[in-house]
Each structure stands twice: as structure tokens, then as C-alpha cells.
Image (cartoon, rainbow, N blue to C red; front, top):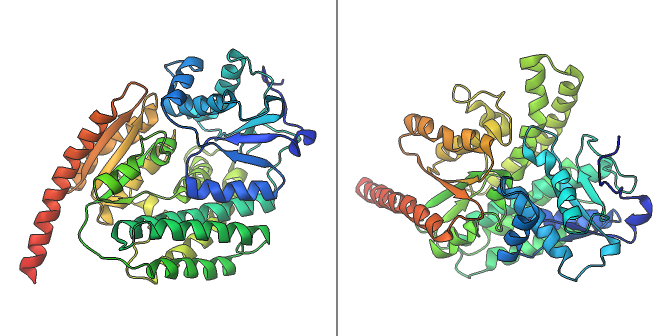
Length: 427
């Protein structure tokens, strides 16, 4: 039975329709945008932000709905109302995980909001690898998935290197400019069918890492702050009130944000855990283990490339990250970000980044359990942990959010001063 208010995105629409996509990760999504355009889809990443987006979301989405849903739906409808797009030839796209998180229902919430806004004829495309919804005009092929995965891995590498270079650069904007050049170069290579194999990835990831190592820097002690939380609020500047920019530009910190690959690993590993814990669909578990192996091959290359340059700190292998939470939280906890959120905090602390902002959106109960709910346990295990949960919702005051972050940073700077004095005494 077809979902109510669903208009299929057909093959005929592919050549003429503009597909609007909410922004989350600028580096990754810029690569993905070019990949999709090369596949014949006229993808546009939305840049509209500000109070109008939140107000639109509140107007068309129930206020008990989680904050990320309100923002992405608000951004999409605000764009449709902007007059920039031909509404007769525009479609929308959202990811759909299929898990227990409300994110699986964003598609249906969006369609309901579109009807309420008088835009019910606009097609909504579900981007999912599991066949939750199908459209004759949009298909995820194996070659496309391969390119999209490459975009995610390169995006993680660029984000990591930029974040560990920019706070120390002697020429302001050099790391950001280098990131932009590599995004353009990788997009060009993808169009030529290059930079996709494991061997090519090894070559280009070494070149990327070496190019960032050549950026002139002045290494001085800075507070390092990790950012974790619900996936959209963690990454999207619209969702976290430009948290990363605030920490780097106004508070003079180095920001560490776990890569998107971690979430993909988490999603791929969950069916394996389901097969082990509950005896569910062992064939699906086996297929997931093959996908996991394929991704791990690229992860190994990326970590090896980063380790070549002593200036940079690579992420831990996914298997180590998963192993780190055994005895802290069960691997069967997989609603929303589940055990991964706790694991990311553990990884940051064990890598020396004990100052952490845990972004908590309104309406995300799993996130509050595996994020805020685990802080007390982590402080027992890691006394140096300096974690602050920050709530994000339509009524939250940015000033209050920043003040809570400032309190966390005050403790971090005091500790950094102690560490520096201790290092001086040791010398």
C-alpha cells in the first residue's frame, strides 16, 4: 500500500527536477553533491539559515517533534517559499535510516508538513540503502555507493586535517583554502572515475595529509574540545548555533569532531550484533560483515596516512572504539546514536581530549540516555573528564549555551595551565 500523500519521483523527473537537500557537513556534502550531479541528479545543498528556518519548522511541525526534524523540515519549506525554485520542477531528499530513531519518520513528517503548507504535490525522495522506499527515478547503484563512500572517507580526512591545522596556522584561512582546493580536485577526479580504489585512495590520502603538513603553523598550547551528540546537531551549524566556529574563532580552541565514517560503521555493525544477541537474520548479519570489511580497508589506509605526519592525531580504528565501551554500555543499545555516542566520548578522553561538549537536541531520548546519561559513569572511570551537555531546542538561549560552555572551558584552561606548569617543571 502506497504511503498517503506520496508522489513518486519518476525517471522523467530526473533530468528536469531540482532536488533540495538540507546541509549538514559542508566538506562531505559538497563532494556528495558533485557525485550526485555526475550521476545526472540536479542536487542543490541548502544554505538558508536563521530564525526564519526555525519559525517555519515550528509552523509546520508539531512542537513535540525532535529538534533536528523541525530544523531540516523548516529549512526545506523555507527554501520552497523563497521563490528561488520552480515548485513544479522541484523535489526534496532526506536520508532514512530505518532504525528505531524518529529519523526514520522524517519523510512522513515532511510530507505531512508539505500538505499543511499547500505543497503536497512536491516529491520527497528517501535516501536509504535498505529499500524502505523506492522511486523509479532514483536508484542507489553499487558504483554510486562506492563513490558516495569515497566522498565520506575523503570528507572525514579533510575535516580532521583542517581542524588540527587551522587553530595554529600563521596565515589565517590557509587550512580552509587548502580544504576547498582539495574538494574541487577530488570532485574532478571522481568525475573521471579516479581516486576510488584502495590503491588510489592510499596515494591521494598521503598527498592530502602531506599538503596539510606543509601549512605553516605556530604550535602553542590550546584547549582541545571534542564535540559529540546526535548526528545532525553534532555536525550542522544550523543545529548547534555555529558551535565549531564559536569554539575556534571566539574561544581559541582546537575542535575534534568524530568523523561520519564512525556512524556508518555503527550502522553496518548493528545487524551483526542483532544476529549475535537475538539470532535475527544471520544472512543480513553476514552481508553487513562484508560491508564492514570493505569500509575497514579504507579506514586502515586513512589512519596510516595521518600517522605518517607526527603533527596529526588519527582516529582510533572502529573496532577499538567499539571495544572501548564494553562493560560501560551494551552493544545492543542502538537506538539513535546508541552506544556509539558513549564510545566517541571514551575515544576522545583516551586520546587526550578530555573536554567535551555533548550536544543534546530536544526530543531525542536515546541521545540523552547514551550521552548525558553516561556522563556520571565516565567521570568515575575517567576523573579528568570535563564534559558539558548542552541542550538545543527552539527556545534555548544561545547566551545560556555559550555561558555553560565557558564554564567548561574555564576548567579546561585551568587544567591546561597546570599541565603547562608541570611540563615546565619537568624540563
